[in-house]
Length: 285
Image (tube, rainbow, N blue to C red; front, side):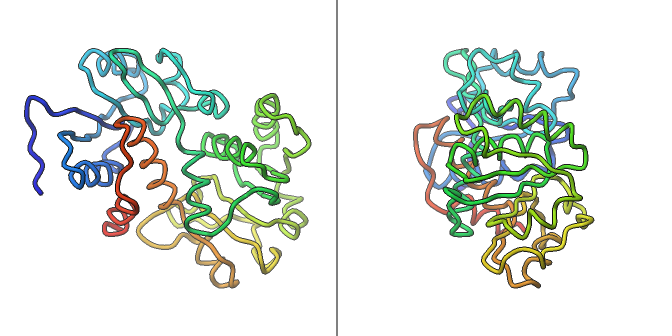
């Protein structure tokens, strides 16, 4: 079915800088078309110095909702009227709903990760020991969601220990079991890997074919699983290495689809067809 833009069409989108590479329009428009909804999803390129103006413009133009990607996930927060609890915990927003001019910020990234872990790796995190690589924005949202889901222990490994320590310090106040969260540098990685149930890469390493120095997957137990939040047209070096070692693994394409499904439901009150977004993304790998 071909999409027709008309005066009644509701507009959704994604803001970022850059944003032309985003795959979100592909999967969101596939869902709108499949459900016969009079809606369209488009990218908006917003330079950092124009973010405040852009948010006000989207509000005034009645854009019904939008996703937020790099570099605006944290910096958009002061320009919104309300923030959901998970957005506050994560310190980042990836989904905005415009309710009659009131802008509400949500974070569906963490929940999307949990869905993908169960759906794509059969790996619920309750009671599991986790090692998370990286301490940036992606890691923060991931750690908050993993802690909320009941992980037995989460260690954030980062080359700059102070950055990881700050992340954990900020998150500890949101969870009653503070002992479950820890930090480490790469020198302690061998011991951590030997005791891990799940390894998650929350850095951007691998996006352009980079390997993660000092990471030996042979140290992981045979039952451990590997999740790379990076995704691309082919397997990342981390996923290729995991498969060589016989470890169950997957990349972040499933997380992208899952967080998109949650955002779609936030905007429309309707669940998209199961598996549709993931299928649309897989077809364009």
